[in-house]
Each structure stands twice: as structure tokens, then as C-alpha cells.
Length: 81
Image (tube, rainbow, N blue to C red; front, side, top):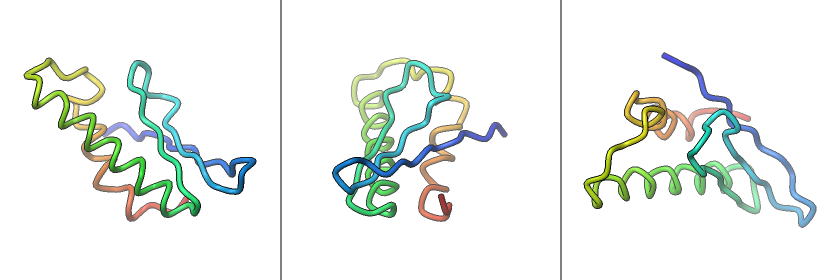
């Protein structure tokens, strides 16, 4: 299984941003006042992306259909950044 790197950065306003630079063509990011909130927001955004494809009966991009993003969603809560 491919490992996807999630980058978390402290924002100028004091919050945290998180994104996955390797996911070309998938706008997946998160933001929160704490690192945990940012991870949770990223996970919520990932769920919304997957739900969109399902609701619209659209073809899921390879990066998602390969299970990488759904696995990432499950691991986000357990990963320390």
C-alpha cells in the first residue's frame, strides 16, 4: 500500500493547516485551531469528497479508487504529525 504524506503547518493566524501535496487533482486540505482539529477537518473533507462521487454516480479518480484516500481517512485519527 502506498503511503501518503500529510503536511501540517502552523498558520500565521495561530491555527493549523494540513494538506496532502502528493494527491494531484484532489483538493484535500484541512484547517483547525489545533493540530487535532486540522486532522479532523481533513478527514471530514475527505469523507465529503468520497460522498460526492457516490451521490453523483461519478467515476472515482484512481488515487481514490485504489483505496489510498479511504485508508488515509481511517488512519488520520491515529497518526501523530
